[in-house]
Length: 203
Image (cartoon, rainbow, N blue to C red; front, top):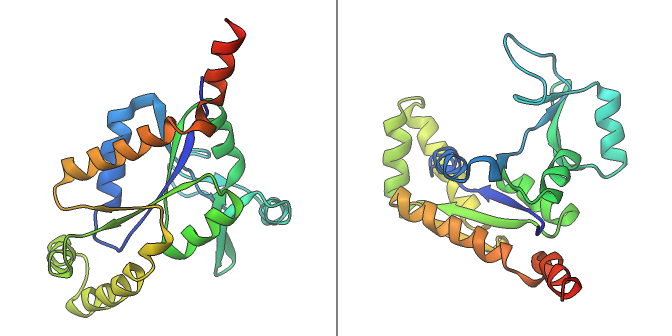
């Protein structure tokens, strides 16, 4: 069995990251997972530990930071939020593909701690299309849409930091593009060493 992989997906708000990742997870079934974040805030309502978040104490979170076990993190108010490396590594060791849906700022941190990660930047076909998508959601005011578009331009300028760029115009095409990236990465020499060893040892 070859090792799994970490797929980092970033892109401007409104470019369809959540929809795309959800569709790929459904297609891949038990072969893929979405990374679960860690937080020090209290559990709310019907949230489940290990499903919605990993809920930990501030001391445990800070210990993870100290030991280099956080791919990225930030503090909002009195609470930490971030991506723990341990659960991701366990899934990858069993051959799973793990998706991390993260902002551009966090994406830069991931590669430093986990250089094997494959980073995909998702872009809209045009800013006009992005504006229509943001407006169609009906959750933001005109001013908020304009602010998101300005942020999107700044984020697009950082797309060159990523390994792959996928245009999300037709959803099915974008899904196939990312599935192709996943398959190609599975066949990389570093990820196929276990297969080679099995073949040689069974000769």
